[in-house]
Length: 391
Image 1 (cartoon, rainbow, N blue to C red):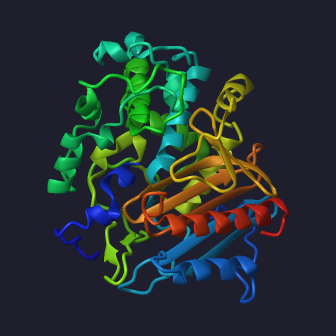
Image 2 (image 1 turned 180 degrees about the vertical axis):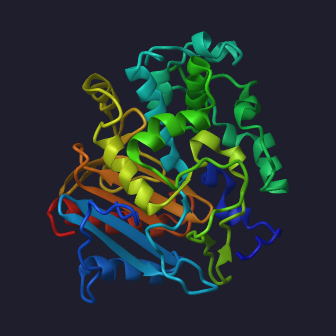
């Protein structure tokens, strides 16, 4: 059993706002090449990452190309047992879940159930009138100006008092309903968790179908995701990568089950595995879920718009996806961070080469910026190995 999080609340360290901020056993089509070699550069880099000050107890990366898949890992999945990370281990994907809400919304656009120019006023008239002109496109590329509910004092105070509080996920925007837009829609880029809550609500309003069911019908089933879910509670399905708050000189604290996912929902609540995330990003980045016209709209890039945390290389933002331009070439994907986890999923624009990179501690510009810089450099090395065929 995981260690129960201590209620002395190192949420100041974990940072509440920042938290919110194909290797399946059945996948016989991929021939898995031999695992990491003792003197392999990528292996050495992840081992050094684990040993870095405040570094993650565990790292697992899955690289896949047309020849097969490879797993590179270091450290452990569970400090209590010493078990190593595995591709079928569950994990919190944090804001990489925003790519899933993007996939749902753009699939509905492709089916003409939604339009990118649909406004909150048209689809969600119960939201504040001041937000009415915000469009689905602006929500997906974070130019909406919506205030971020996860920074609202009432929300933060509730979470600090009881991290496992059960929120009504469909009322999360109530925490900022009295606030105006931060800027005129479409005039600026600003990453906001509120955007993807609104995206999910628009999808439900357009279809009359719960968001969780839309995920199953439009994303999980088409891409063959068998171990991906959107829970409401704090429990993790077994087996799972344990996530830790690593704040020396204190010993690592298991925060895997610290926070109820009801408070992040479509903005970051999904639980998945490296295997499923490999399948997802190959299909999502490769445009398999909708037609070319929608893919073109998705890839209208906002220069310098970064995911949270920033991914490797130069970041540009699209609709529910980011472009990472590294020294070796371009991949598309998303990142995420929450208590105990930092994620990168990326693939080439055709979906043929992919990388999932998961570490078991939270890393962002606000939480361990030095470690984030080191992590991004390692991720870029992995992208280069992938693109050069040396994975």
